[in-house]
Image (cartoon, rainbow, N blue to C red; front, side):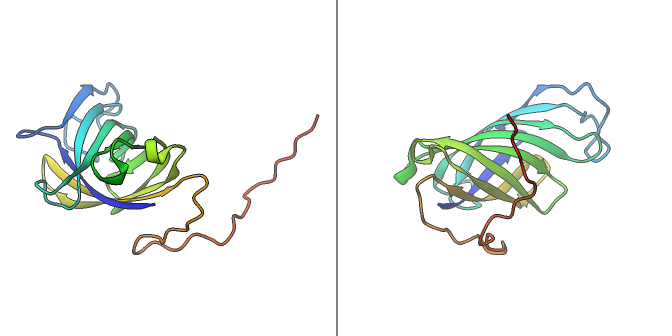
Length: 177
């Protein structure tokens, strides 16, 4: 299952949808504006829409937390649930976790589960910045979801190489009694 949507991340007024819930007590992060410290944690409830425009059709909400998890780079540990509204996936969720490195043009996070139509989902989310301002970002999300028992092979999003034909083991595991 392939989905494309846009996440509207409002970090300040008007329409703020992200708040600091834990002030970091670690050292100041040199890659970010002053007064941002290692360990800072934000909660967010961002709109998901069909395109870059904030006034486009609401596709859902991205709700979760982001913690500044690097002492030197703008890297956040993100845990979020994408609650979809309307259409065939109404009320279903996609659970996403991973590192969001704001210095990279493209980030990839893991789909680690879901509910409703996405029960037992796995996959990935490719994230790029579609629009960036001081207190407002729009992220373009390419969501690639696999559901157990779904034999279809979705095409990768533009620019992504196809998946390998077969898995290559990276280590051997031997169990002894």
